[in-house]
Length: 347
Image (cartoon, rainbow, N blue to C red):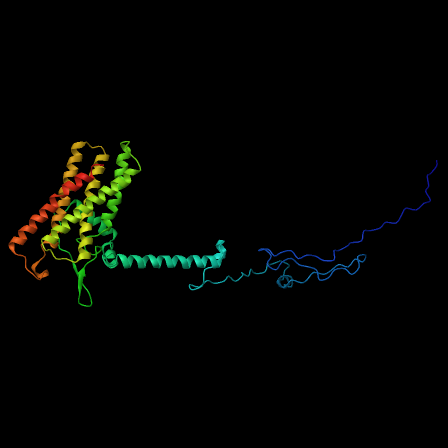
């Protein structure tokens, strides 16, 4: 048996020498690591010598690492210390950068918006404040939910309502004014007429659509017709008050008359709903007659306090001839509602 021998010795093993770059860039900070990544203090002096650099100690980690374990060998995690959050006071400026907007641009936009709103209010007060004061307009919109419900019930069932006189509110300076609609059901408001006006336009459009006659122009035509009816009724009552020398403030009387003229839309809406339900033409006509009578009776009793005021509320007494003419005028206003409502229900 022969053995193979090799007298040449194998080459010595050479381990790779670790090399380090001369500069380690510092990565950016992230929300999860606000302190950033650790960087080494120095680089090796010679590329051939293994010099391992020591990392910089992190103060936030030393507290966790230096805490000894509790007796018994069980590890207890350190208590969580929440980061303090900045407190935003009521007067502190709003930080728009959190919403993706530039603070300077957002502040300029807010200032521009406030200037536009102030200019609009000044324009309305300058041009409309002399004819209709804003305080009087707010007075007629001072309503509540209970008032709206009671007023609608009064418009539909006015037969047994008492009293019809408006309530007077005494002020601290000795003056008096009418109570707002919220506190007096007999006080006229503009909320119900305005909502009824808009509802009438939408209901007329629905009525035309169900009859395959809808067109976008119907909205404008219906609104123009309703506005023309209101203005015609207003000028009729206003001219009667002028020729009969009926006293009353210009601004308050204008708003009161517009409110009374707009109440007829409630009866018109009830009539149109009766027609949409398909109960027959007889019931439709009966509904129209009932709503006309209720509206006429309501206006007859409500306008009586303005056309025929009490003797204590006027400086000059009303003689019998003037009283008879005013009563006739009241009946004309009440009877004329059948013409206005007859035009409005034809949609």
